[in-house]
Amino acid sequence: MSHSSGQIGDVYTCPYCNNRPLEAVATAPYVRGFVVVMLFGSKSFIGCVPCVRSRVLGEAGWSMLLGWFSPKSLIINPFLIAYNLFRGVLVGANPSSVGKKLRALGLPDQPSFVNVQAVGVALAASMILADGEVTEEEIATAEKAGDGVFEGFDEAGLRMILQHGKDIPPAEDLAAMLRNVLDNEGKSKVMVFLSEIAMADGNVSQEERDMLQRIAGALGVQAAA
Image (tube, rainbow, N blue to C red):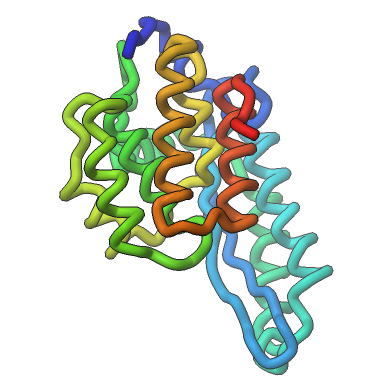
């Protein structure tokens, strides 16, 4: 897989606008109510200030629309909406937080190259987690095919993320970091690899299809039909 070198502005541009540099990090908690079931979680964003702010405020908007349909969410949702509105307004440039987040992802904060292997492990974990079910078939497929796509694929790291990772950035953000690093052949290999993971349990869920589409868009390639 060929990599192309680039300056930090080329490699670590905002994954949302692909224009401004990485400046900010924020985590937005959310709740979704489904009659008697409540889904609670958080999303982590890294990008330029305007894009991170819009994502955090967007989560507040989604909670306003979808966060009311269970008894517990009726109690929790107003606090989360208020928090995200307040947090969104306060989003600002924070280079130290950006550096800390990049290092947590296994990416150098002052890179001459992207740690493609570390991003690959995180992408594999994202795909395995996409439908909310972690199967041994998916893990085994990732471990078997990983070295052929990401040299030195960290199998132990994959299992650690699956067991303990609670704050993986969206898969399309990870993929965007590879857009200017991999050649077309490398990008195609990544898409085949992730598709194999999605198919490993014999059922490609809609969540997995949607994730493959978003990753393909972030890489700048066509998703497989």
